[in-house]
Image (tube, rainbow, N blue to C red; front, side, top):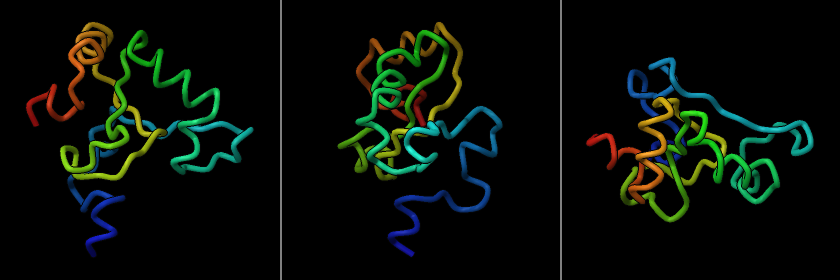
Length: 100
Protein backbone atom coordinates (compact mmCIF):
# COMPACT_ATOMS: atom_id res chain seq x y z
CA UNK A 1 0.00 0.00 0.00
CA UNK A 2 2.87 2.38 0.79
CA UNK A 3 4.48 1.82 -2.64
CA UNK A 4 1.14 2.16 -4.41
CA UNK A 5 0.59 5.52 -2.71
CA UNK A 6 3.95 6.77 -4.04
CA UNK A 7 2.95 6.20 -7.65
CA UNK A 8 -0.84 6.34 -7.77
CA UNK A 9 -3.49 8.57 -6.23
CA UNK A 10 -6.27 7.08 -4.18
CA UNK A 11 -9.72 7.12 -5.82
CA UNK A 12 -11.12 10.63 -5.78
CA UNK A 13 -7.71 12.31 -5.39
CA UNK A 14 -6.21 12.01 -8.86
CA UNK A 15 -5.33 15.15 -10.83
CA UNK A 16 -6.64 13.26 -13.86
CA UNK A 17 -10.11 13.33 -12.35
CA UNK A 18 -9.97 17.13 -12.48
CA UNK A 19 -9.82 16.88 -16.27
CA UNK A 20 -6.79 19.18 -16.41
CA UNK A 21 -3.97 16.64 -16.42
CA UNK A 22 -2.43 14.57 -19.19
CA UNK A 23 0.22 11.88 -19.28
CA UNK A 24 2.53 12.67 -22.19
CA UNK A 25 4.93 10.35 -23.95
CA UNK A 26 6.37 9.52 -27.34
CA UNK A 27 6.29 6.63 -29.75
CA UNK A 28 10.10 6.72 -29.88
CA UNK A 29 10.14 5.87 -26.15
CA UNK A 30 7.51 3.17 -26.63
CA UNK A 31 4.86 5.30 -24.91
CA UNK A 32 6.37 4.12 -21.62
CA UNK A 33 5.47 6.17 -18.57
CA UNK A 34 8.76 5.72 -16.75
CA UNK A 35 11.32 8.04 -15.22
CA UNK A 36 13.57 7.50 -18.24
CA UNK A 37 11.20 9.60 -20.34
CA UNK A 38 12.49 12.71 -18.56
CA UNK A 39 15.95 12.20 -20.08
CA UNK A 40 14.69 11.88 -23.67
CA UNK A 41 14.73 14.89 -26.01
CA UNK A 42 10.92 15.09 -25.78
CA UNK A 43 10.95 14.85 -21.99
CA UNK A 44 13.58 17.57 -21.69
CA UNK A 45 11.70 19.78 -24.15
CA UNK A 46 8.52 19.41 -22.12
CA UNK A 47 10.32 20.28 -18.89
CA UNK A 48 11.83 23.40 -20.45
CA UNK A 49 8.87 24.61 -22.53
CA UNK A 50 5.59 23.33 -21.08
CA UNK A 51 4.89 26.52 -19.11
CA UNK A 52 4.82 28.52 -22.35
CA UNK A 53 1.72 26.51 -23.25
CA UNK A 54 0.13 26.59 -19.79
CA UNK A 55 1.31 23.23 -18.45
CA UNK A 56 3.24 22.46 -15.25
CA UNK A 57 5.10 19.31 -14.24
CA UNK A 58 3.22 17.99 -11.21
CA UNK A 59 5.83 15.67 -9.73
CA UNK A 60 9.43 16.80 -10.34
CA UNK A 61 12.53 14.80 -9.40
CA UNK A 62 13.80 15.02 -5.84
CA UNK A 63 10.55 16.47 -4.49
CA UNK A 64 8.72 13.34 -3.35
CA UNK A 65 8.79 14.54 0.27
CA UNK A 66 6.97 17.70 -0.84
CA UNK A 67 4.59 16.31 -3.48
CA UNK A 68 3.90 12.93 -1.91
CA UNK A 69 4.56 11.20 -5.24
CA UNK A 70 7.54 9.74 -7.04
CA UNK A 71 9.01 11.66 -10.00
CA UNK A 72 6.69 11.48 -13.01
CA UNK A 73 8.26 13.26 -16.01
CA UNK A 74 5.18 12.50 -18.11
CA UNK A 75 2.53 14.00 -15.80
CA UNK A 76 1.57 17.57 -16.73
CA UNK A 77 -1.29 19.67 -15.42
CA UNK A 78 -2.83 22.56 -17.33
CA UNK A 79 -3.02 25.70 -15.17
CA UNK A 80 -3.09 28.37 -17.89
CA UNK A 81 -0.23 30.24 -19.50
CA UNK A 82 0.07 33.11 -17.02
CA UNK A 83 -0.09 30.83 -13.98
CA UNK A 84 2.33 28.34 -15.53
CA UNK A 85 4.89 31.04 -16.27
CA UNK A 86 4.53 32.36 -12.72
CA UNK A 87 4.87 28.80 -11.38
CA UNK A 88 8.04 28.18 -13.39
CA UNK A 89 9.60 31.46 -12.22
CA UNK A 90 8.73 30.66 -8.59
CA UNK A 91 10.93 27.57 -8.34
CA UNK A 92 8.23 25.91 -6.23
CA UNK A 93 6.64 22.53 -6.80
CA UNK A 94 3.21 22.78 -8.35
CA UNK A 95 1.42 21.83 -5.13
CA UNK A 96 3.41 24.48 -3.21
CA UNK A 97 2.61 27.08 -5.86
CA UNK A 98 -1.10 26.23 -5.80
CA UNK A 99 -1.14 26.19 -2.00
CA UNK A 100 -2.25 22.57 -1.89
